[in-house]
Image (cartoon, rainbow, N blue to C red; front, side):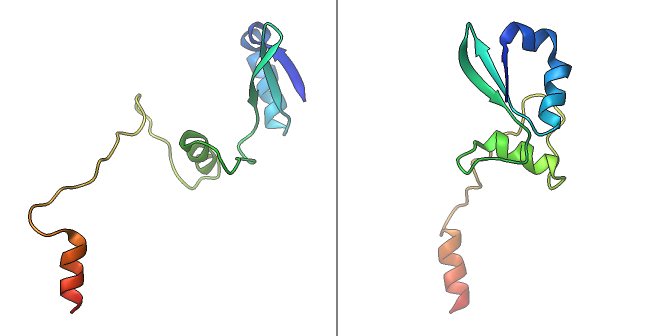
Length: 94
């Protein structure tokens, strides 16, 4: 495991990304205090956030990440008038 300060990481980013590509981990420190760990996308934790999971799936070629800035728009779902979709389906199955 490699430990690097923020300034050195910024100045030598390709060097540390090569460490990560080879399966290593880089601990990033700010004034000697660890603030982040950089690792490859093969070992995504169970409690990983949505962005990390999506990045891992993209690395595996299972999804493609958006190319425009701003990421994915939030989808609140569709709204309908009248009975709910569940009620309609249940009626149809009778």
